Length: 162
Image 1 (spheres, rainbow, N blue to C red):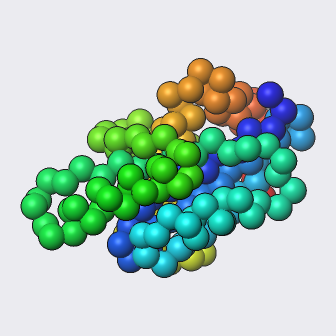
Image 2 (tube, one colour; image 1 turned 90 degrees about the vertical axis):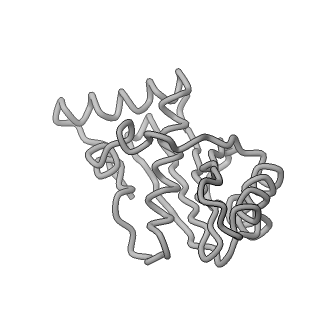
Image 3 (cartoon, helix red, strand yellow; image 1 turned 60 degrees about the vertical axis):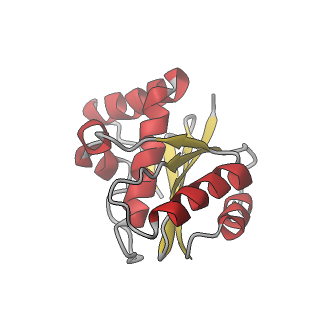
C-alpha cells in the first residue's frame, strides 16, 4: 500500500480534536494535519475530513469511545455525540482503556503527533492522534506500516514528517 490515510477523532463538548496522518510509503513521508472543531457536532468534523488536499485515498477513521463513569449530566450528551460522530464519519469507535500504555510518547513523537501548536481543552488533538494510532496497531496491514516506520528510524532512515 503506497498511501495510507488515517484520521483520529476525540469528541468533546468544548473541542473535538481531529488529526489526519497520511503515510506515503514510497517517499517515506508522513503528512500531519489537525483541527480543533468547536463543540461536539459531527458535520463540521466530516467536512474537515472530506476537505483533505492532495489525498485521493479514502481515510480510515477511528473515534475515541466515551464511557460514562461518573453519572455527570454530560455523560448522555457525550454518548450521543460519539454515536453521531460514528454515523456521520463512518468511523470505528475504539475504547481508550489502557491506550497510554500501548501508544507511547516515543512513537507519537517519532510520528509528529505528540505536540500541536493549537491549544485545546483536554489535549484533544493528542488524544485523537493516540486513538488513530491504536486503530492502526489493531489492523495487521497498518501495524506493519508503523513497524516499518520504526524499523527505518532505528536503522537511521527516519521518515520525513511534514
